[in-house]
Length: 114
Image 1 (cartoon, rainbow, N blue to C red):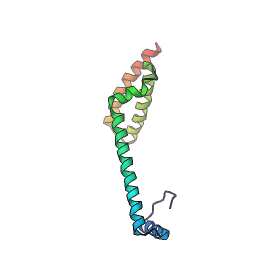
Image 2: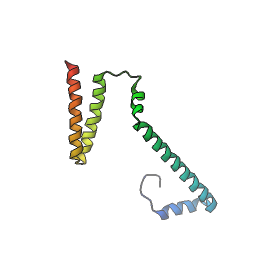
Image 3: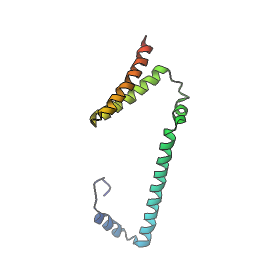
């Protein structure tokens, strides 16, 4: 059952019954599982919130002291990845927005090569 294949509820219950855990042990296990899931979800929410904060980006990269060209290269890589994603999902409006951003990045990169 640990090879990432789908299993039925019956298979899970049979496995639990084989362990002879009993209702009390099963309830304790269920509480632990739910508790961990709630903690993970709250950690995920916190992480998303922190990463979306404007200050997060500036703090994360302040020690790198990137040049304008280096920042543009990083942004170009991100935009190209997003462009591939949007093309696969046929999200044309997002592709158009992305192209506009890419044009600004290309302008910075061309300026750096002069």
